Image 1 (cartoon, rainbow, N blue to C red):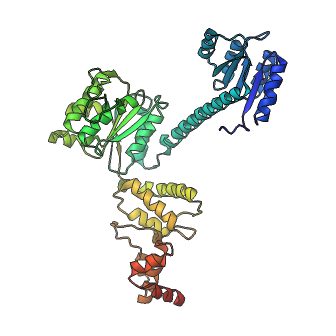
Image 2: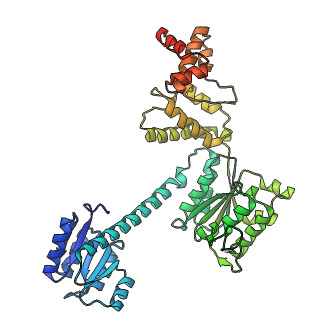
Length: 450
């Protein structure tokens, strides 16, 4: 059932008794109702206040319901307009729906029926509003200004995204795993005229060739064993939108040939079908491979390479844009503090040095994971190196490095490590004793001595 206390209704009918009847009934159902018997007054009121649903008679003195509906929809195209009339016919109902009415009711109106229709109209209006909100959020989230980077190389990436977004040209996004290739593809889509249509992403290395083919092109019933219904492929689902072919360098030569045909002919043929279907899809391809080398090895078609590589955007690995690490780390810190309702005022100097010296083989994705984990583990006002778990650094950055520089005693070193393990397991003594290789009783004794 729709929660209707917040929703406003405007009832318009030159029959004042009808207006009073509907206002009285619907007000008791917790709607906020206004009733008007003059269509001109109704239009004036509608221009001053917003309403979710209009319930209007069709034949009124001075202005008919269709004209009133057209004028009101010029003010608010999303308002749900329900037409009621004592002179109903099938032709009139069809005309009402064509002109934009949500529903057509013949008098006498059943009150319980009109309430059901109003509830449905409001529910659909809410869904449209939610869709618009999500679209706006997607545009905001994937705007290229939200791709973090102050380095010269990332500024070049931003310029290319801004350049290619308004066009329909195919784009090749290059970079190591974790550099943000899908984020760039989404930014291009949501800054293009295709943004109201689908953005679909598929990892070409995640599926075997036969499954990838059916996913991309779809199939008809009976195309193969198990094909009991027709299924749209992702090209068809992404029609008028964007399709990201991630890890395209792993696509088989057979599928490469079929993809080339789709790009050239702008049509697809589902498996088992004899008919082709026209499509309008922007293709963004992404890979962590050097496709020129794959072409030379015979693993990638040269003609396809040139068709997808109209514009190439290269995302540098994080180790080549170290100046971006502090701003990225702070961005992720703010994000996960907000998600976990924590207040942490940045990173201490040792922690930031550790981040700057780390190799980041997993690039930005790995940095995000490390910061997220550190937010969960941090018990102080700033993140310290003890909150990290970094392995394989350039300078062998260790959790023990700060304390080792002070030449601690064996007892001090033991104390440091026990506290670290307890912190990592959130105080779970059974788990801590297992990691330390001591009994829980010994751990309790250590705590008493501390």
